[in-house]
Image (cartoon, rainbow, N blue to C red; front, side, top):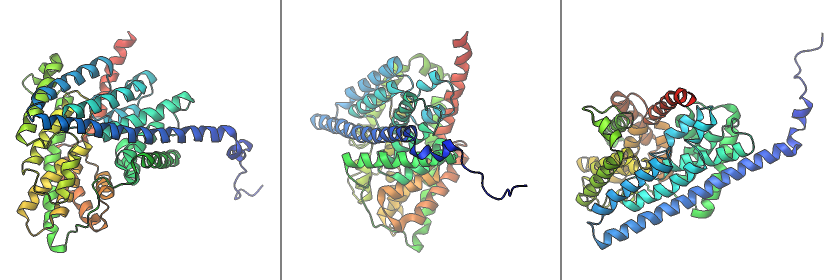
Length: 443
C-alpha cells in the first residue's frame, strides 16, 4: 500500500489559483470595496462635523432656537425614514447582525443596501443638524456592511467571504480610527464567532478602510492622548466606576429594548405605534428642553464634552452625564437614524467626573476614562470591544488593566439588570418581525 503519511497533492486548480486572473480580480474588487468604506466613513465624519458646527452657530443666535428646530427636525427625520428609508432607523448595528442571518436577498436589502446608505448618511447628518444626541459610529457600521455587500452582490459573491462582517468591522475601524477595535467588534458583537475563512478578508478590509480613512482625516486618537494612571491605592475607584457604569448602562439598554420591542406598560406602546410622528416630535422637544437646562451641552455626539472632561475641565455641569443619557435614550427610540456609541462614551465621561468628585485623591483624568469604558460596557455588554475602543481612543498604556477590570465589572452588573445584549436582542426582534411578515407577503 502507498504511504499515507504524505499529504495529498494539490488539485491542479488549487495549484494555479494564485496565478489566476479571477483570483486576483475578486480580491482587488473587494479591497476596492474596503477602500470605498474608508473614504465614505471619512467623508461621513466630515459631513456630521459640519452639521454639528452649523447647529452650534444656531445656538449662538439664540439658545431658545432648539425648542423649535429640534422637534421639527425629529419630525421630518422620522417621517422621511418611515416613508422612504425603512431599515435606516436607529443605530444600524442590530440591522447588520440580523442581515448576516438572512438568506432572502429581498429581506437583506431592507437592512443593508444602497438605499440604506443614502438614508443613513443624509438623515444622521440631519439629526445632528437638528440637535439630536446621536453618533455616527453605529451608522458607519451599517454603511460599511451595505457597501461591501453591494460589491459582493455585483460580482456574485454575496454569500461568501463574510462580506457583511468585513464591511461592518471596517466601518467601526474607520469611524474611530481604531483597527484593533474593528477586529474585536467583528468577533464579539457582529458574529459572536470568527470563521477561519473570513479572518483574512476581515483583516484586509479593516486595513484598506483604515488607510483610506487616514488619507482623508489624518492619523489621530479620538480623544487625544493622556498619561493618567491608577495607582494601587486608587483601585476602589475602578470597582465603583464598574458598578455605576454597569447599573446605568443596564438601565439604558433595558429602556431602549422595552421601547423598541413594544414592552412598555399601560398601552404606551400602542400610542407610539399609532402616532409615531407626534411621538418623535415629543422626543425632539424633550431633548431641546434638556439642552436648554444643560446649557447646550447635551446636543450632538458629545465628542467635545468628553474631551473637555478628560482634560479636567470645569466647564461641564455636574448633571451632564444624567441629562446626556436621557437625551441619547430619547433620540435612540424616536425613530430617527443615529447611533449611541459616541454619546454613550460622553455620558460615561460625565459619570466618571461625578465619581471623581467623591474620590478627590484619585486622578480625575483616569476616573473619567474608567467611567467611559464602564458605562459603554454596561450598554453593549461586550467588555473586550469596549476596552479596546477606549484604549485605542486614549492611547494610554498605563490604564490597560484598570480599563479591563472596569469593563468586566460593568458587564457583569449590567447583565443582572438587562440579561441580553441590546444589539442582539434588537436583531432577534427584527428577525422575528420579518419571519412573521413572510407568510403574509407570500400569500
